[in-house]
Length: 344
Image (cartoon, rainbow, N blue to C red; front, side):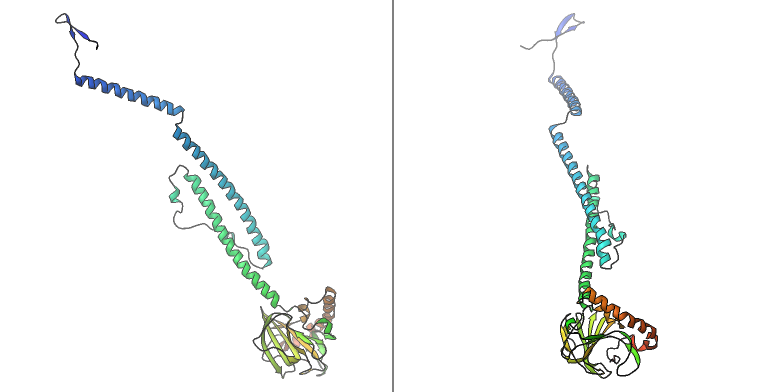
């Protein structure tokens, strides 16, 4: 049974029953509901200040995992940086030194990215600084790796060229050491037929007629002919890289112009053609068109003792040649494949 409420009426000196309208009841109910909501909000705020909600705890844990992962990423990037730095130092100080190439400038290795802001999409997040820092570090490493890759491409090409130059460079005796009877050195000497002192612009290798003659380096045959200037049957090989070799007084010529030859390949046989007193091979080496002493280009198929002996025997002739060279400079300095000078 609902309680009945009374209110004292001073005019009638009696108690009147208090009656409440529906509107008043709704108003009171609204006030009570609002007060309840306010109290609940206050309690929730206080609780949230001191305690995390389950969702907040999950997000906090996820954030910690993200930061830990970024720390591991930065550690890995630093390790890659150190490894890349070591590779770059070896590239500049070893590989490029051996292959006679200039080191890559630092301004090229560490060049940045120009143009628009590449990292604008990463801005505005809670971890934007971490993400942008990691992205910059990664981009820098990628750029350095690209430069290093180009460097290795260049070094591979130079290595191939170096291998080709090594194979092409005259480096062996044109006649097998076991077939040699005697040698005549490079330099000034008294000509056995012309009977006067003149520069001997190559080396003579005496051997029996028909002894095989070998190409001293890889190259292309650019001349095969009977030379009327005294060389007799003659072969000239262009080895590339500024090297040419000439083989004279041959008995037989076993190659043709345009043929590609390899070091050690037989190209002809020893003869006595042209201005010659006995079967032998007259051999010349040219570097950038200038005749040089072949003694310095026969080291591959000689022992150390044999090579030293060859060098010692040629030194005196070279000194004489230097004393007389100015008189014959126009005759001996520059090769003319179509008009080589006479030999003995």
